[in-house]
Image (tube, rainbow, N blue to C red; front, side, top):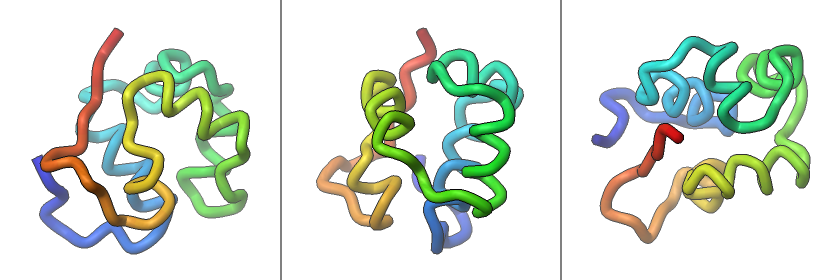
Length: 82
């Protein structure tokens, strides 16, 4: 499932992933090993994703290239709810 509206920024793409997962922001953060405040800063564009956060998101099978650039080699953005 691709976003219906363009995700222009990392923050937009992170919000999209959270919505697509069907989880609350708190649940999404916990599943990814991030704190609620970290996720909030990333989703609101106050901070760029750190290397540590990217590694944690990659462990959830999130396409980091898409998250950072908006371009993906995958046909579909994948979220695995673990």
